[in-house]
Length: 232
Image (cartoon, rainbow, N blue to C red):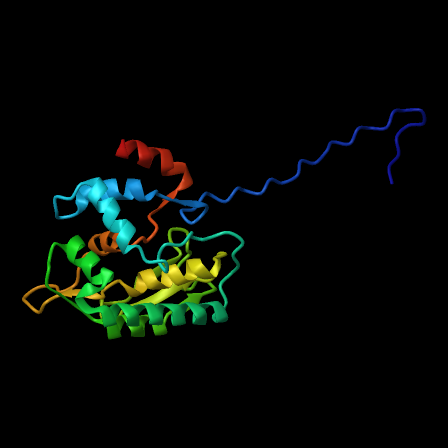
């Protein structure tokens, strides 16, 4: 081993800078914030095909709110969803859909879709919604999606062949998982009566109906101020 000359000062060792791990860019599913019901009512007043005021819509939302949908997402102290959690969510959604079906025209789900679509006569395929919820699956290996933009999705070549997939890689509470599965089961539930053209509604229309039922309207924390200023 090479040595320095006797009496010479030892050379200073340069500290090797530690490699900095690249920070993962913020994703839409990181710390999302739910808009208040007041702000949601104001937004719906501008979009619904009716002449209701924000206050009137807020009152409707208060009466139509469904606890299974009105949940904090992803919730606090959650964990990566398990098969047991998914089975529990399926049972909760099954009961919810059965209750709403039994109510017929008095169902708040029915009323919400009628208001959001502006069409008083709709048909509801409850059996289809039940089957979709029953066959829902967790994506624990990101084979379906990277889950950077959402926690759940309905996907398929057609509306009738669509399936429900839920994020299995990010922490969720049981209530959050119940809400997500319920939300996805309501897609493609309401249909226009048979007539030429597409019987299904656009996602935006379906999302307005769900918002009336208390479905959380999530915004990325960094965009919250921008969204709220747009409402002022």
